[in-house]
Length: 189
Image (cartoon, rainbow, N blue to C red; front, top):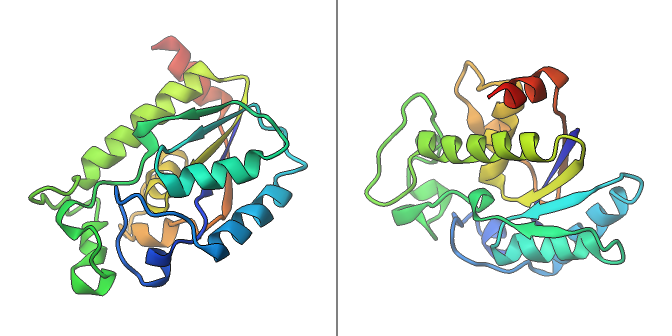
């Protein structure tokens, strides 16, 4: 089993360095071009199923990638972006963005999703799909924030707690092999 992760293409908020969690921002022209380029890069890869965040920027990216391929797409709220709550729409420079992404500090916010709760949500999703689709190649189309716990799920949380170095770039493809051992552990549960 392989899992491919693609972060959505660029949005205007990405360019402006504004935090976009649940804000339903569409791709800009660059984002559409990036999604088309990513689609070309994926042409030689067998994908059995696309699981996509239900936010517009991810859905647009998935639909562009899937054009002419007719791969089944499942929209799954569990891989929507982290809820940034009171930080939504702010510029990254206007608050402690690095602290917001510190797993060790695990800061509690008024309405933003706690990082460890966010990781739990993504890990539970990955546990589910690695069990349910163990014989498939899956493409996940989601968000920069989601790319962090996905990477940590397969490679562990970095000891230096610098999670921001793990963020996928817009329309970047990341590939993960699900080890047989992991699938056997899931099967035994």
